[in-house]
Amino acid sequence: MTPSSQVRYKRVLLKLSGEALAGEKAFGISPEVIERIAREIKSVHQLGVQIAIVIGGGNIFRGIAGTAQGMDRATSDYMGMLATVLNSLALQDCLEKLDVFTRVMSAIEMHELCEPYIRRRAVRHLEKNRVVIFAAGTGNPYFTTDTAASLRAMEVNADVIMKATKVDGVFDDDPVLNPKAKMFKTLDYLDVLKNNLKVMDSTAISLCMDNQLPILIFNLNTAENFRRVVMGENIGTIVKRDK
Image (cartoon, rainbow, N blue to C red; front, side):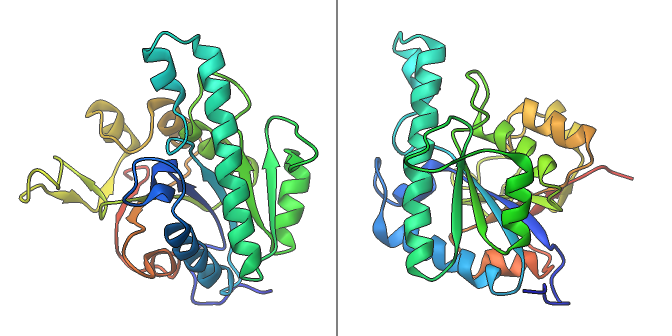
């Protein structure tokens, strides 16, 4: 499938939070929400765009929360990685019911459930127009799925990281609490780090900065927004080197 000449990005990495899959619930996976997200992904996939995905696991278990309750950090982080595998398998199932060929590749080997992560194989899947979901983070404790998204995006030569959120972009204050909060259209990586803006964690931002990989933050709850940003519409906030 050849990408449409209208798309701005031909290979993207979509970063989803685990909480996004829960919808209005505090825990678990909402069938309605995950189906809606899958349909958004299919819409972009039909444009010929190659899509890789990293999903968090916060709707099931957050490693940092386990640590706060006295659990060993490495153990709780591994539990969080397993939560991302559950979410990845759920999204794969939903995509394949929509006739979108999908592969889950895990940084922690579990052959009965998914493929082990091998960079060249992941790139080949993308070239064959399969959606690839990267599960289990980096496979290492102390690293977040934000960092995993940055790392995988660079390994597969993605054009951009698209971080899906519940708000329209990056603001100077919480837009839910402050209706007058100002949204940034563009930011430099250093602005994000200096002002501690909650885009991605500092390790992920530094990786993107060192490798000139742009990050586009947009609202996934607005219908067809994923398609719109891929087509190049000026929505959301983009983080890139300020030339």
